[in-house]
Amino acid sequence: MRRIFRLTFLAALAPFFLSSGLRAAEVQKYPEWAKNAVIYEVNIRQHTVEGTFQALEKDLPRLKNLGVDILWLMPINPIGLKNRKGKLGSYYSVMDYKKINPEYGTEEDFKNLVKAAHKQGLKLIVDWVANHTAWDNPWLAEHPDWYQKDNTGKFLSPYDWTDVVSLNYTNKELRAAMTAAMEYWVRTCDIDGYRCDVAGLVPVDFWEEARAALDKIKPMFMLAEDEDKTELCNKAFDMNYGWRMHHLMHQVAKAEMRADTLIKYQTEFLKTFPSRAIKMNFTTNHDENSWNGTVEEKFGLKPEVFSVLCYTFPGMPLLYSGQEAKLNKRLRFFEKDTIDWKNTDLIPFYQKLNKLRHETKALWSPPFGGNFKAVGSYTRGSILSYSLEKDGNVVFVILNLGGTPCSVVPGNDIPVGKFREYFSGRTMNLAKDTKFSLQGWSYQVFISE
Image (cartoon, rainbow, N blue to C red; front, side, top):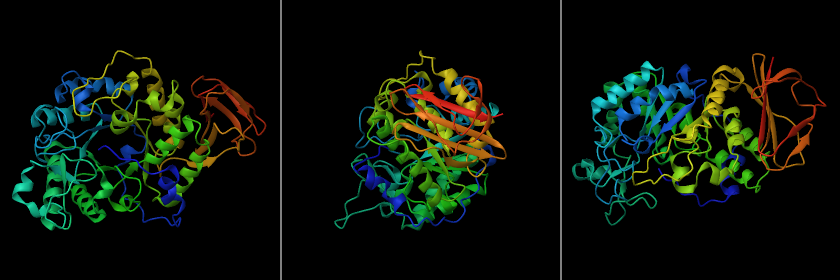
């Protein structure tokens, strides 16, 4: 769902720096297949000319060849007509939780898509909108007490989302109905989990109850669109959003923030969140693309260095529909706006990054991945370097997140020994006095031999 960002950077980062540093209870154990996975968000409406499940099914072999593992489908439910925005409406205005948006096909088409994804070795999770419904969702007429009202009895909409109405989670019947609706798609279509929209606006105990119910059917993978409520990652969710990392990267790209601020952010995340909590790292998604700008608008003409950062920082990397085709426009949110797939220049780059993610243990998601360590201290604010180590597998990453070429010596904290630079293939003996020459917007990733 479209997010509204009105906070300054310091206010947004405050929950991390003000935290007590006490770790929460261990997070729910996620399926092991997610430990080295890459997640790919599918904008069904815009992904193909047809905008259907059948058309997406034909693209599964290409996505498998790209090297992604988890397909996250934006909401599959019918979209409300009342107070609709634009011609086609918001994906997040749900008219019926147990039906399929007819624009995408039928329930049988969706079942076939899930089966075909599984045959390709892909997992599939569905975007779930639990905080609000469309105004013409039958629940509003049948169960008005399931919805929030002000002191005059008027139904409430969250933020400026006038096409939806907020649900009331003090009502036990609503909780049971919502859980049953989530169970429905797991039982009938064998999906592998959910991405939960504005998860922080829904009570944590509901999510914990729902997760427990879903796991009785099959082990789930759960992604929360949230970063502020650490308790969501105790029992309910496996992964949350790296929103602050995304906005920090944007500020670094504009030279408004030092690159090493990302180290402080990561350190606070590790202190604050459970050890098994995964952070989703991204340069774009449906919200950012439609409302805030394309990857090039936000990160300049050479944004690949920020993708390398997302793949090598602890967490799980996300790709969005069309990102591998160098998506160069803001997709309209309420209208048909098909992605142009003609540009294939970045496909080998992302295939190589996905291979790196799959095969390099130090880069896997916690707790399977490596220990993160900052390396070097630089006067030049665009340089960032760090290492990760797991069972003898060592990765050293050095990035120039600015446009000015430079030479730097990371110093005593650099891992030493024989390494191979992943993208060039050259071998190099790293030592404490090793000097690195970095072009603007460049990256080097060294893997221990």
